[in-house]
Every structure is written in C-alpha cells, then in structure tokens.
Length: 211
Image (cartoon, rainbow, N blue to C red; front, side, top):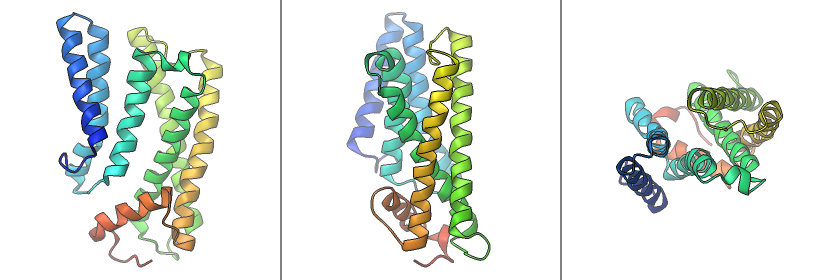
C-alpha cells in the first residue's frame, strides 16, 4: 500500500520524519511530538485498511494526509490559523466533505446500494451524521490537546468551536450529497469519482451492487 501512494504523500512523510529527527536533536520536544503525531495519524488509515483488507484509493490517502498535516503541523507549528483567516474554514470544510464521503462508503458497504434495505436518501443521511460526529470528536480532541499540552487549537473558545461545527455541517452536507448523486444518477465526477474509485478497487465488498 505504501508503494502506490502519490509522490506528494511520500514527500510529506519524509519531511515530517526529518523535522521530527531535527526537533529531537535540538531538544524541541513539543515540535517533535507534533511531527510524530502528525505522521502517525496520517498513516493510521493504511494500517486500518490492511487490517480490514480494504484497498484505499491514493486520492483518499492524499486528502487525509494533506488535512492532518495542514491541521496539526502547518496550523499549529507554523501558525497558519493566525496567518490566514480562511485556513480553519478550509481545513474543517474539506475534512467534513471527506468524512461525509467516508461515512457514505461505510454505509454503502453494509447495504451495497440495496434500494429496498436503504434508499440513497437514507444512506446520505447516515453519512451526514457520521461526518458531523467526527467533527464533534475533533473538537473534543482540540480541547484535550489545549488542556494537556498547553496548545491553542480552540483559539477563541466557544466561538471557534461553534464556527467549526457550522462549517463541518456544511461540508458534511456536500459529502453526503455526493454519495446520494452517485447512487441516484450514477454521477462519477469530482467527489463522486472518489467513491467510484473505491468501489472499483474493492469489488468483493460490492458484489451485489451494479451501476
């Protein structure tokens, strides 16, 4: 699975490893911790996929790695959240779309497009709920990091949290709607194309589904 990752993903992993090593040598423990945490979280989907015997499309992995690196490393270490007012919106909106797609794929695997067991609208609804739940868990993670390691991931506190959840809601709607369009009208461009790529790479999980 490592071999089929995009060059961008590989470059990010190498840079994180070099930064972590440099931080350890210079006793910058917080930087080393964030670098190793970013790398571990960005590689976690590959480990989970291997355990579940699922082939994750490189486009999925690239999106996941970019989000985690952009949030934890660029956002916190290089203070992109303060430098660019739109960075937080982009990170949360993009991740919500991604988790909406992931949520749809998970529900899709269970029902394989069976319109009698779960119509496209029901699958989209559960995908939306999944993405929003992940967004809420991320806010809890930010709170825990701030309290445990003295970071400032929540920025302005309640206003930041509620703003993030609103953006998460909009992104989750886009991700869930993409899944709905994929099933309802066989759309396979943009976000729908990522779903189609996952289906094509894992035919054993969708044996009953026919477009």
